[in-house]
Image (cartoon, rainbow, N blue to C red; front, side):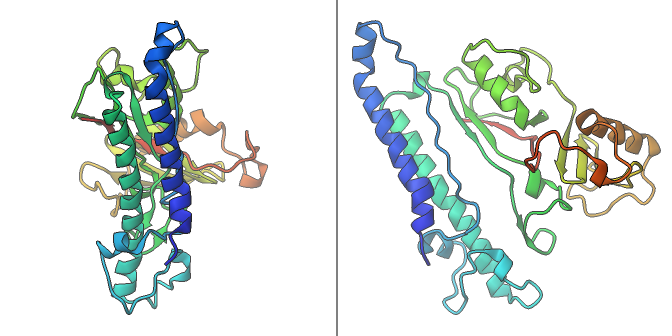
Length: 305
């Protein structure tokens, strides 16, 4: 199993950031004495653990090992209907091992920040792309017809020198909240944005900006709040809705046979605030941007220790 892609994306990039941090720490005191700003900002981007799932073998072996099973580093090659239990478990192990491999390099970066005495005046923020299905609904990967948390919920973990520490909040946030949160956290003035400062809600400076979130992929759309998750196809003017009551069905496996009309109506109106009026047919819908995107959400905002 090749690990060239893995090392290229995360290992080499992490080493590069670590080298930059060491250089900064070496010179920051000297810069201060001559009145030069000692602020810095850097980011580590990792395509891993996206497919192909090809971590160094020992990382996958820690979760499941069977020498007789092939490593399907792209799950689409695996025929689920004909796959053995061992093949499925090994494919899961490839992904989980890959995540662990990425975690290792993030750990090296955090250790470097601590070792260079940067922890007390440095904000560290970890965010991620969407999730993936590991046979949650009988398959691997993602899809617009499966806008469930295992696919759409993403990570947002913050370590702020001023705290709070070791806490978790369940406020609703979305991707567009990330930029204003960072700018406000750093005291940077900015024009009005679509997103909101989530950190202000975390610290109690203001109430959460939203009480629901929206997720979409092509014509598939989901509206989610504390009580209901409403899935619909917005490719027509009169979309049908599938509704789950999260109070009794948190995993969204048993849709309501007769969902409350007011819940569906509210979800449709919330969807319109994002995409506008529904078209007669989807071919009549004019995208605001040519890029296809999967709008993801976070309802778990983790605060580092």
